Image (cartoon, rainbow, N blue to C red; front, side, top):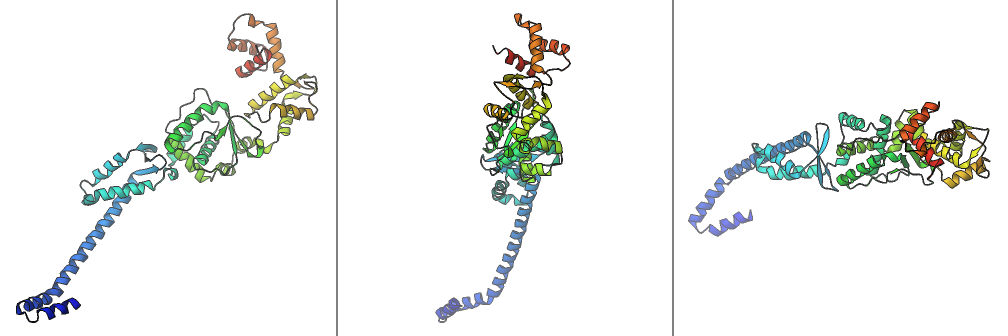
Amino acid sequence: MDSIKDLIEKYKTNPYMNDKLALYLANLPQLMQTIETHHIQKTAQLNELNEKKEAYIQEFLTEHLIFYIPQTEIFIEYSDHNYSIISEDDITHYILSELQHNELKIWKYKIKKHILKRIKENLFSSSIPDSITIKSVIQNLSIFLTKNHVKYFLTILGDSMLGKKDQPYIYFIDNSFKSMIRKFAEQIYIMTTKSVSDTFKYKFYDHKYEHCRIITGICPELYPSPTKILNIISVSNYLSTKYSNAEGFLTQCDDTEFINTTLYLKLNNSEKIISMFIDETMHTTGSMSYKNFYFLWRSYLKQKNLPLIISHSNFKNSITQMNLCKDDIVPLTSKQLYIQNVKLFLDNHPYFEDQYDLGDLLTTYNELHEIKLTEDMFRDIIILLHPN
């Protein structure tokens, strides 16, 4: 208002400029109304376009389920029940192609930037696979004994990838799984930089029994190579989140046999397990060498899918304290007499004079004995009797 007063004062002695000023001031209300109307229309159009932009972005993110792994800067697309790597260029191509004939194309690069930002906030570790993906992963890991074994294994993997390091548990698995798990670990590290190679243990080193968990089963020699590792990662993370952790899975599982075998070491101490071994496999008459007794102990653990849960020296000390070993003689005999039978068989059939296939020897042995041996057991006994 001061500016108008200044103009009136300035041109009051100039008729021409004074008339022009009066004309402009007379038209100013209409001019301001026009400007206001134009501003309102433009704002409404802009708001409408912004709403369409947000709707498009939301529709795009709904139709294209894309996640991000920040550690490796990898984009992952979930389509047809499978996860796969997608490049940033492919995402850009999706966006620009869809906007080519859209009124939002004037903002296409701004929209692309906004979508990429939103995708990078959509972490792969929080993706939720559908039931078809979960069933497929479980079926592909049928090398484990049961569905619960698979889910437990995957939940443990998820705990490790999600950094749940506060869990003090030791997960023992048969050495036959070592190659498979190593391949899993390599692929997981490439995708996420998360190391899971030390999650599973194959040997016992005086761990506390209450922290030990057993994953029973033997991995077949011809197991399928890990495929669709992104599916496995997603399902593992999902199960770990769903159950809170692997202990949560055990709490919610209703398979009593699975729980008891998994928690076998927590539920039993070494003395109790040794006593069960003796009760199940030994007669209290006769005697045998400590060497043979220890061999049968190791065989018993294999049959129970257990690692060597006590060191050799501690085992001998335990049975000595139980008055079961004196001068390397144990006052017990095996109920199945594995070693004695094989020794007698080899003494009566001196096959070592010629070269025989182990399988052929085992076939002949099993034909002559009611109690059959596996090839691994037969080989171990022969090595025990004839180490050279």
